Length: 471
View 1: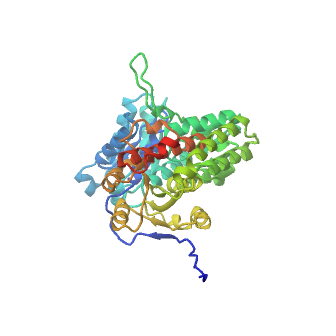
View 2: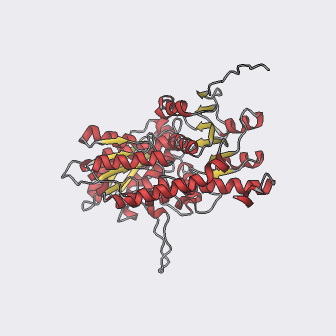
View 3: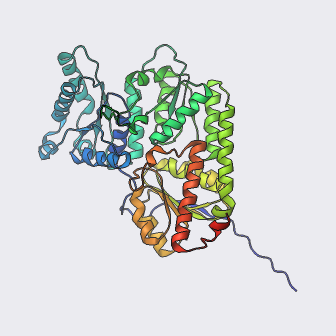
């Protein structure tokens, strides 16, 4: 009887940019969309999109699909003559119309698009002229105009959101008396995530401000038949961001530049923590809050952590172990969910990041994934949904699950692969915007959603569905 030595191959974690120059079936939206999302998170604010009417209309449609609510967003509605003569007059007209029509209006982000950036309209100069006109017409009102440069020919809604949050803080923040409050920049998250964060701050006894506060995007229908869908972040919140005890950025590419600006301009200490998907990353967030405020982590959150761990343990080894997952979307979401999947013993074998940010290559989470992954993993930067579809068709990766927003649903349907909806937009499943993905409770609920999605697929395909009888 002979013994032969078998070679143990080290897992390969390959991060690269897609080879094609063009984009087929993009997975992310444009920069102005992200800037508009930041704008509607502010109370008494109407973003003014400087471009064609579609740059506003189609984005509003996405928001309505995702949140099932309507939002006030204005457009300068440029036409062909503006391409020749410039469109700054449309900004002046739009600002004055909004000020006259909405007496409570306090903030107007002026959001550029690809056309107006190519034309080269002088946004800052036009805003100066608008400010003079506003003082003449409405001397008793303070209306803040914020220039937000978001050309659509680069970046995505992620970078547009980041640019808008930074512009708002840069324009409005001003030094005053210390507030003792904590700035929290969660990034592009849902109302359910915001409500969860507020619960964590309350349990820790921390007075904090969330930028942008979208809790009321899940708006009630009241007895008087009114529906108030608006952001909760106020002008005063933005002004006092310079006087906080510290800032925590929960997303490296979605709001972190605003926290960095506050540190550089006003000496507000800031911590960039991992996006709190899963147990360990939530641990990091709570520890960061404790470090900046001196407040201990209460037993109530320790208990919530334990409940989440118990729920995940009930599922991980029996149903999740070695299941191969593809995750697509924006970087903070994808990397955070990849780390979460590994906590569940799943294998995120394919990660697709959907825009051209060159900083992604040096993201420390890629290094962390390389050091911990015991399986092959491919990370495609500046990817599109064709990259996912092609790999499935070519059988270069065998997948048990897809995680991403609703735009990829037809790939999952055609390939008969179960899919869990995460990210933006999600419009083909009910109520996802009110369910948290972050934190301990988000980890538990997402793990159970993954499990139930796999269970339903087992039953419909009659693939070992008998296991569920003995679980």
